[in-house]
Length: 347
Image (cartoon, rainbow, N blue to C red):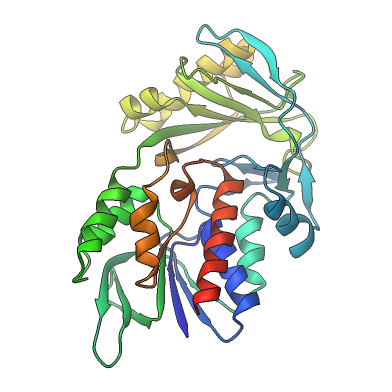
């Protein structure tokens, strides 16, 4: 039995973990377009600094995900963020408001440790920098799923295929697939209909520590050009004493309007707004910066469930936070676990 997985995000890693445990005979091949794993749970390093510039942490809102992190996986380096998340409004006024946010987990080495540990505990083969461009369904004597990458290499046939890229990218793959079934169009249309928020992120480094009583600020009403500001120094092992690293995520409208603008201009604008919200003019002049645009960052609704469920009868599985409609790392992990269990039962 051979299973193919497109994408190496958190949901794919969780599904792989389940398959390896429940169906040891299954061979799993993961094809990832980038050079890393864990999707939008992304980590970078600079000298002695580690920072999560996509998803910020995993919440303890799901019992099965808590069990995964604290029992199934090695807990060495697993840490919690103890400071609270506060809020700010459209005028930039800050106030307490998220004290009951629950535990927030990451790793000293960064949030990508989730996928690295999940894949590392299995016999799956992960091929990085392998962009899938085409999918086809073969029938006849050797039925199964075939995929082709951008260099023309063909992979498969797979007894089952899992698609974990963001919904718009999955929709493109399905729309162009060689699959003689009316479900192909239904599934592609369902994935294409999932709305997404775009996020442009600035990383701001300082040679002094920001003195505030919170880990992060969030703009819950989405009426400010900045949606999120968080302090990486609140994560044990991420930032040396006496320094600060802020992760600043712009709101959807601002991100769309400025997505293709010069990065330096975007970083400078977000640093100015961050200084205004936090009330510290020094923050307008960071010592160093980084940035990342996430065109498909956060699904705002889940996909229609009926075509997703019908696809499983054809050994085709869609997974990720866009399937649940909850743009959170714990939701992606839970969906991956559920998908892996369903596929294991079928195999």
